[in-house]
Image 1: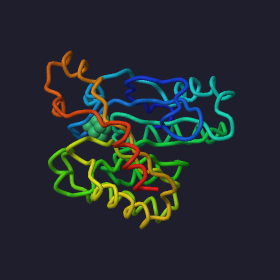
Image 2 (image 1 turned 90 degrees about the horizontal axis):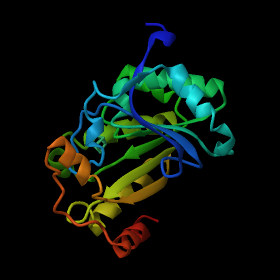
Image 3 (image 1 turned 90 degrees about the vertical axis):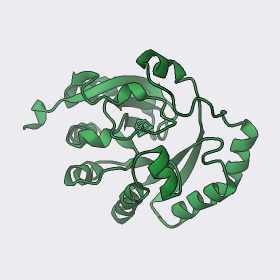
Image 4 (image 1 turned 120 degrees about the horizontal axis):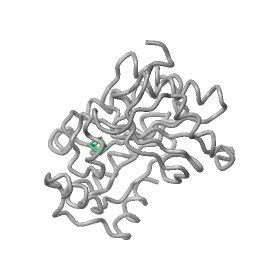
Length: 238
Ligand code: SF4
């Protein structure tokens, strides 16, 4: 398939995002995810056949309209769903972004490391890697894959020296312990490519999506973290 024939399935766009990577960013949420995280706030992205088809050119044209807002740090972020499922498409988008001088950022669970994913990473300026838990048991129980998957991915990012932000959604009663925060810090310290850790509060506004899809929200009964809890954990990782 030539570059121009590739299309990707897109869930939605956010024109001026400020929380998914450095600076102001054009964020693309792709359709399709092989995981089933209990805390997922985008269950509507799971179906790989959903969304709308776009060519890489259409994506880059859309993003370029906002380039005056990007400044020196901003650019494009591809998120999901799981963007690695459409690695070839994202690779082409990122190649075109680089031709246009746009910074590229990939928000991923790191659950796949195929040759196509490695090619995509060669055009990626920063990875936002979601390390959802710090034990294999929690990964298997609440994500649906092994901890080894994101760790193997992180080892590769380190070998390739790709600047990386580790991200974790803090979920009370699941991963809000001091031990977890310390383990996360240890993972970051063992990989020199990691220059930032971001803890994000678990939010339940997505309940409406689960209701409209008529499926249960696995973490519906868990509380959202308090500001004090976030502060305490943030203190432990700095
Ligand atoms: S990896 Fe992301 S999109 Fe996929 S189930 Fe987990 S939180 Fe949801």
